Image (cartoon, rainbow, N blue to C red; front, side, top):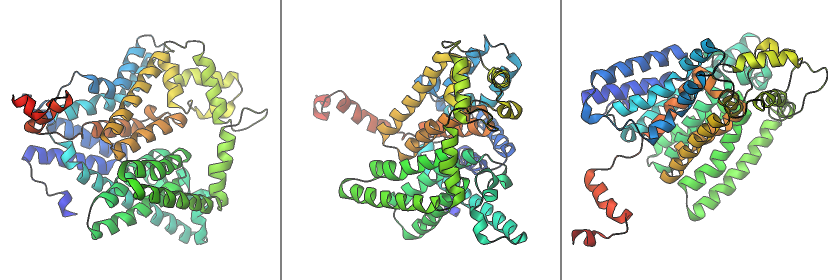
Length: 433
């Protein structure tokens, strides 16, 4: 634990490191703490700003990382609901800020990435343990059987109530932590740390199952059965791991579905969500809301209706279609892709998809499992959630996207000089001549 706080660097970089450490540690809790640390981090960066340490600001990397915010700004021009559009700016402001902070701050993210993610993984594990303790205290208080932990009052959003977190958004954090721990167990030597990380893997996996987010559970299966063997293993070790992981995945799914609560959550609710509208239904399916959004998109497919217009448009449309449950609850479209298309049209959607493709290309080029896992998370969750319309979603997206992009290894100048000739097809001897 002490090694996470003891680093050899300049005083300014040490303070930057501690800011990032506490920023990651604050993510599972109220947004007040993460915002407070971010403000302090920005002030510290500006105080110690030096011209020679500033990384390039105007390039493709910055454009891609800030693309969502820039699309929102552009679509505000023709929005008929300017106050809500500016409110959307506020929610997405971190998408603009984090890339700038990482550009201006000289801290070597690649050097300290393992320590930062290790601390984050331990905090997430401790948070899940706390939630289980809180759940079992409640069960004991009401003299319920221990098996009640698998019932509705203790799963999904109900499980995360003590920390006031949306189940899917908290599950995304657990997935980032889990991916790091699995990578650490496979790649790093030392049995003591491995045993602790293995225990944390079990805790995080249990937490993901308890939170019962269907999209995150799908990402978990992708990580274990595709991501880990492809990025971390080779040859016969890869084949053996795939066989074992697939077997355990099937067994785990069978055990989970043996519970009526989880079976209803993962199977029954999925069927309901994907079913079309029926006459006299009380709760509209997600598919019915998607169809409503698509109807609106078809009327203005190229540019959309402008930033901040989704709540008002859907509110009126839900009432017209007698979708009273969605109307009264003020629900959104529950799909980031459809939300972007509704507000900024095909142009905005293509810009966002281009950003995702760019992120995947970097992750695959670097063979970075953690970055790949993050990109899969964003891609999958955006099908079923308006990820970038809520503070916790935009904070997660902007922080980790910038974190993984800027954690590329910084090569010494001599190393770069040796690599340049090989990139253009020359040998070192030919260069010397």
